[in-house]
Structures are given as C-alpha cells and as structure tokens.
Amino acid sequence: MSVTPWDDQSGADERRATGFGAGGDEPYAAALSGAGTLQMRAADASGPRRDAPVVEFDVARWSAPADQVDRSLLNGVDGPLIDLGCGPGRMVVAAQCAGVPALGVDLSAAAVRVARRAGADVVRGSVFDPLPAEGYWDTALLIDGNIGIGGDPVRLLRRAGAIIRVGGSVIVEAHPDPRMDRRFDAVVTDRRGRVSAAFPWAEIGLEALLDSADQAGLIPRAAWTVAHRTFCDLTR
Picture 1 (cartoon, helix red, strand yellow):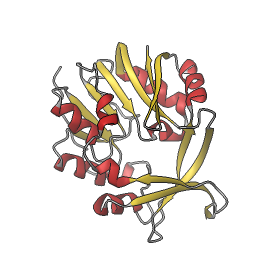
Picture 2 (picture 1 turned 135 degrees about the vertical axis):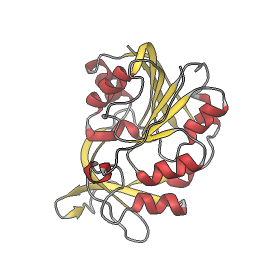
Picture 3 (picture 1 turned 120 degrees about the horizontal axis):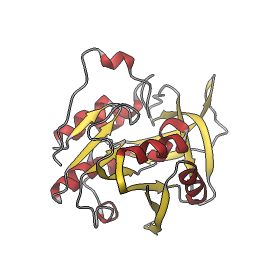
Picture 4 (picture 1 turned 180 degrees about the vertical axis):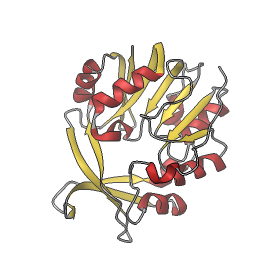
C-alpha cells in the first residue's frame, strides 16, 4: 500500500483543539526550535499545580535520530506503519529508511514542519480525525507517552484499533511504573517560564494499559521492558 500525505484545509488552524504543549506561550514549539526540555504537571483553573508531580520530557531525544530501542520496535514490521502523535518524526524517518511505508500524524504545526524537513511523510491533525487508509495499517505506534493523548486511554486504544488491519499491531509505550494510572488536565512549561494552555492527558502503566486494552477490545500479544522503557503489543 502506498502512503500519500495530505494537507490541512485552509483556515483549519483556528479550529484545532489544544494539544500537548500548545497554546499559551507555546513552549513545545519553542523547544522544538531549541531542542530543550519540557516539564508537565497537573493544572487547575489557576494554572500549574505546584504540589503536583513533575514529568520531564527530553525534546532533544524526540528530535534526534531513532536510537537502538526505537529501531527495535520496527523488527518484524514489513507492512505500512502509522505513528500517532509522531512529533518531529524520528520513527517515521526510521521506518522509511528501513523500507517500511510510514505516515506520521501530529496536531502540532511546529512538529509537522520539523518532521517534514527531516523527510518524514506527516499529516497535521488529531488522531481522532479521519485518516488515510483506516483499517489497513499493519502497525500503529503510541510511544513517548502518547497513550496519554486525549486523557482517555480506552477511547484512544479503541481508535487505534480501528486504524489497524485485523491482526495488526498497536505498539504502546507504558509508564515505567506498572501501577501508574492517572488522568488529569495538564500544562507544559519550560525553563524560561513559558506555559502552555491546559490539555487532557493520562499516564498509565502496564496494569492499567492491559485493563484499558480489554475495555477497548484489543488483545495483548507481548509486553517487554528494555532500557527502562516498557512496551506492549496489542492486536484485534
């Protein structure tokens, strides 16, 4: 199957929902330009909750070429791959270099620009938007914390399951703590004090992931941990 990227319709930017690190002072876009780090914490109506746990994101790693652990996720993948929340596109580029047809999807205009400059085929949009070739993808990726997109893992996994073919794979990266299970409104900040708009997010470890997969009608095939990163392969 060939992968043909498509572009947003004119004027769509204003209708986009706020995604990870977007809105406000746009710290995610700034980090993509400077390869910085970001911090995420739960928020309430008054802003970031200072008593909430801080999650660090290394945007430089997302922007770098895929490492050995990343590339291992492509082992055995020979059909088309879709990366849901692809960011600056390192996994799409890695798949394309391995001869695997691949497409990335991301809500961030800044991330899409970076990914396309790197040679990745990427479309801008939500994973919940209509996407090319739904139901025919061999593999869908939800890594780098992207199981948190939308703050509802069951809904997201159900959506990913509809995107892959019967017998295909949804490869999910879970939180390192297998007992982690929280859903919250979050904001992203950077070292310069930039603050994003609030967005819904979730963090789940393997135990909650398996429960969410069951509710979404997906079947676990394997789970493994490598270099302090935990993954699960789900199918339908």
